Length: 196
Image (cartoon, rainbow, N blue to C red; front, side):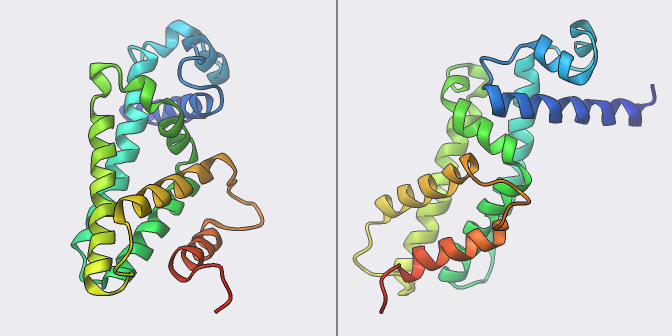
């Protein structure tokens, strides 16, 4: 097998594992489940990965590096505060669309995985996520783009919980695209639902 074929096969195995981890949960997915879904023997999986922990580690760390690089670009940009918030929300829904399994794994299994030293970076990513949103919201209040009486901590929790829980019901290819959902979400978040 060439290096390119090996890398392609690794990517295929990770995609299969991600789907199973998202559907069944990390704890409930066995190496045999992944091997069976991949059409190989369990032992053959160990030619590519030393454990299912290695697989979920690669899945989550790769996804989070991409997501936080995108958030960092928003924070570093020259856009006004409201536009930065809009961009961050859109990035989040795009992540749910493009990386549904990775988001579901993080939402469902981060607390369990975080108990192990190997996954200590997950707590750091949670802290980093909070910092991103608190910075955006604080800039929004200070610039006058957001209400001065806004409870920034509560608003951060609202955004975090309402955006990421969408992974439970949003399906790519459905009636609404992730862009449509982000548009509606931003209208509700920034303009409210009451008739002016």
